[in-house]
Length: 441
Image 1 (tube, rainbow, N blue to C red):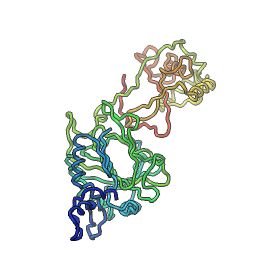
Image 2 (tube, one colour; image 1 turned 60 degrees about the vertical axis):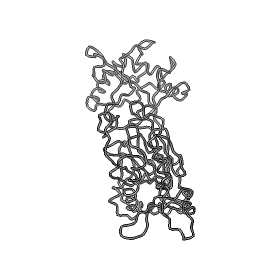
Image 3 (cartoon, rainbow, N blue to C red; image 1 turned 120 degrees about the vertical axis):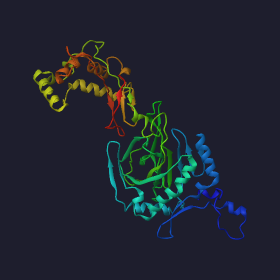
Image 4 (spheres, rainbow, N blue to C red; image 1 turned 90 degrees about the vertical axis):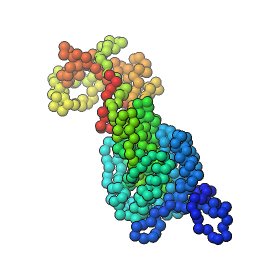
């Protein structure tokens, strides 16, 4: 196994003829958990993670914020402190006995569907309540052996651990979040992929742990900084903080599920800057985003002729009155075939050609992701530039006033404003329902 070159920390019960040098060359003793009602060894942590040399290296790197790489470990500090531990459980990699036993118990669990705008996946109850031998042994290892080790390695006071099993099938995902809640101090994810032909996931499978940088306001920004793909017997740990933004990318494999044991090591909250440490900076204050409102304007070529743009049916007074009644009753209305066909086709052609169009991703990442067109980059006279002139014109404000009877035009209109976006959506784009943003104006 990969840890055979590491120095030995255990006593090691070798034969009487073994020399002291031979003892140091042996693999470190694995840390084991035993089933409470038998002496059968069920789960063993790879002993290399308890080695004195490894622990000292990791502690020094974590404390100083430096990166670290060993045969089984990678410690990163950008975009936030995170460690990847390969071969976490002691097992022969080819046989994968322990992880296969855990995966078999996954097949016997009762799963609950977790579904809302932020996520879609399956999850179990807390691991401590599950009556499965290997899973209970894994939980015991986390609580009795791994938690003290993590506390030593990070210098963060820990009091207890929570754990559950998660399963992501094709199409499942978890959008951007920071895990910053209550007393969570260290988050962890243990990956199970013990199938002989699928021990490591590829980009085509999806399901990566995707990391984000945070800006000066502690808001996550695109693009994704790094992707960590599932790999059998891999444990990922990271410090929960106001900048620990991450997500689980959509699973695109229709053959294998993404299986994990995941949760948090908990500890006393640390107050920072007068806050309680119970929420992220993003949740404690209103989020300012770069959507600007502005008043009606006169286009360079003068007010547009609505009849040259809009289906004449929607310009008839009686139809306008019917539209207004629907808006009053339902607060919305859908006007099909609103534009004249030649105008609409010209807009489509302009979008298809797209050579001069400039698109940018709209964030912040934990609230939305889609692309918006930069109208200022459009050449004068193009169909899309004319569309912008139409929707920001006084003529359109007047038409919307007639459709809604809102104070967008006329004597009661004190300071009517509008915001306009042309959005481009593709797979992976989203907005969340609970968006409490305010706008720049």
